[in-house]
Image (tube, rainbow, N blue to C red; front, side, top):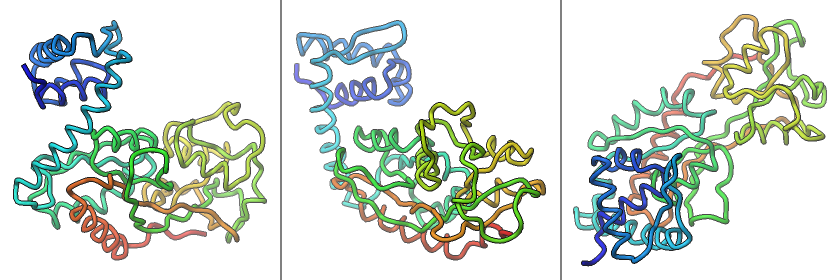
Length: 305
């Protein structure tokens, strides 16, 4: 019996999730059905693809090599399927769209209605994750497109990166901490700058902008969200940088003051990123145009002092 595309899809899903149950859910099949196909696949290969652990499934050395090749086959099959459907440039399933946590809650309310209006036949599956996980997802095919706030890496899959717009950083302090007007980063006391926890690209950008010395990981405070940091700032327990797109949501508390940064300032560029070999590049380029136009037409995020 030959190895089937279905078996390869199931195996790739288990490798991606590290769990048979989650893989079965992602593939819309029962766990026994998926497990049976994986066992049949392993029997055809003559050796196991996965070590079954109490905590989930882990690739064997052979399994790692097999999955690397299987992903290529699955991607080629998806490309051929798109072509066979008439080369519409849109997937025949929900488009898997990933965003970083310091963008998703602030930008999605603006852009999602515009995307659904401009692509009425396209369904979306939205997920939120850190940049490194989104890049891995683009590489293994678990997501189709990502919205990130850093440059796409050169050491992974070949990616197309389309800049959307600049997102300047602002300084958030308690209302009594600074007079009105721009504040230079050099005027900040490094020990009072509050950061997100490790793994967030916005944390790294804040560390670089503020030129924080020493080991930032040794700090006693590290938040999982900007909302948590803002609450500490409102109580006078520190200051922080906020991306401009977050102001409308995070800076409404009257105890908070928002200050522009004096020259040279700091910021990031938000971009859409996708695999170079995707069959949906035309659709993604149109999405870039919709997001840019939506952002230009939107009300400014918030006034600053």
